[in-house]
Image 1 (cartoon, rainbow, N blue to C red):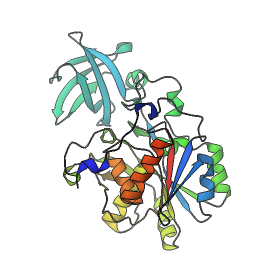
Image 2: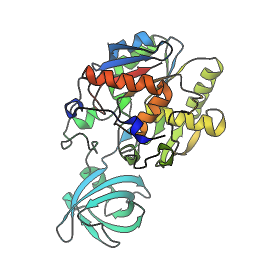
Image 3: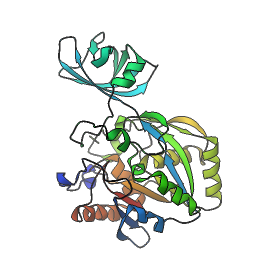
Length: 335
């Protein structure tokens, strides 16, 4: 399958640089059975949910993963935390004029320093001088298509209202539309809510560089499913209730478990599942998601779920109707 099939024209002005008031975004509703599109507001999603639906959300929390500093030579360096090895040692992406070598010292504000220990492929193992300073000095890692520095408002706006478990370098953006009041309103309708955790890694920003989609290799991401959530989802599936996944991250965890175990099981692990057209969905019955980058693995997942022709047509219409795209943009509900 050629990567060019997942390209589309997107005017730069449609890439949202700031969020709207949470819950006021537009919603493009995609009906797979009727192959229809309907333009609504996010609050109208209640009209598309059933009383016996089970909404599954990702409660990961974005960490202060971006650090700006300098090398001993004075050159600028940017570090993106990826995965904690110990409290002070992390796997990182390191960006500088020249690739850092083992033993190189890095210096940051507030007296924080670090040493580059090792390199494994495109990642570096970096040991920091103080884990508490590390949490203080770091910044919210906004995606590269948001062309500004993180501001105070991003501390709140780039987290879901139910974020509770630190570990992501990017937000599960489909969840950014929910307010606490709206979640209560959903539950008051009799719709159940459950949470899983998947820590979104930098792979969400990594472009597909292979010509054939099938040749792309996904980065793995860590997840946790509690006993209670696993049991809730199993019972819902047994009763034929619809599982509504909030976001591609939630979808990946649920479908990974079904593919690996044939059911939703509790526990922690990692997944590098790559979902593209031709994939058979075994759990998710409806999907809430934002609009994704051209040629991205996330767009491939959405086309796998919604149908290639229907979703690509929806994207063309979203561009024509000037929807707002990507992390701080509008949403799509596919059922």
